[in-house]
Amino acid sequence: MELLILVRSSKVKLDNRFLFTKRSLLLYLALAVFVLIVLIPFYWLMKAAVSTPDQLVKIPPIYFPEVGLNNFYELAKQIPLGNYIFNSLIFSTSTAIATVFFSFLAAYAFARIKFRGSALVLWALVVTMALPEIATIIPLYKMLGAVGLLDKLSGLIFVMTSALAPFTVWVFVPFIQQVPESMEEAAVIDGAKLWTILWKIFLPICKPAIVTMLIINFVNAWNNLLYPLAFSVTASSKCLSVAITEVFQAQVPWGKPWHLISALGVIMVIPVIILILSSQKAVVKGLTKGAVK
Image 1: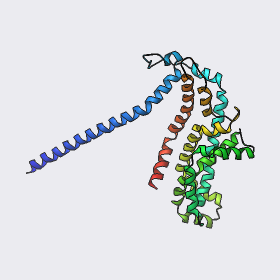
Image 2: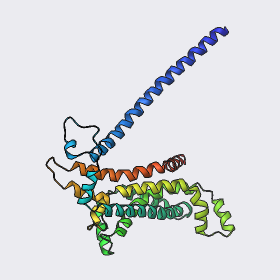
Image 3: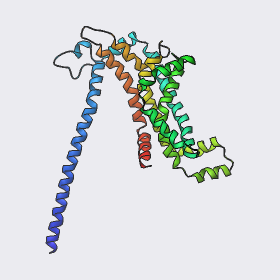
Image 4: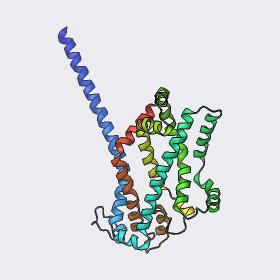
């Protein structure tokens, strides 16, 4: 009898191991397919950025060309590349910081101050997120023109901050609501002011969400094309994303200058990848905490 039980137990273990192995293979296969789908476009972008124009149109294609930087040098001759990169860094960084700062204060008000219609106002923010950016271009253009902020980075930062703030507020409100009010009450009894409470209590607790939204807002501002294209005229306020429209207008014997467009794409992608990889732990921590809450 004991021998029969032992044989059955061994059989169950073998079956489970087989199922586990089969399931693992399917998961690894699905993961490999997903990684290939994600990486192949990036590989072609990198390959096109370092290839000569002749190598790009050659048949059969050259999969591993010699690495050269001529496309980047030629791109820098056609557009004020350094100026555009500087403007993009200022625009994206300032937008991310301003959005998180003002959204955090607004989220604190929604989470702690009880007033009639607060839920309605919060839902109104959702409606603003549903509006397409193109629908607000003309009103924003007239408004920036009225206050003298057209063709200025400060105007772009103001517009982009207002566009990103609703989603950021919605992310911050659940985090702030999770903080016990007794902690604030104890701090008030000890004589702490509002800024001290925000700095010493809420900032450490909400740090994962703050870091996550800083990165997300930076990437959104960095990749935004519509606002810099609509509100910038001179190179003093144009961002790197606008350069794609200037390069794309050029004509070469084989069509569009894909080697320059690819070089510009690499310059656009690399800072974002570095930012994401250097802060991936904070992003994952912020997203998972937000999901749990």
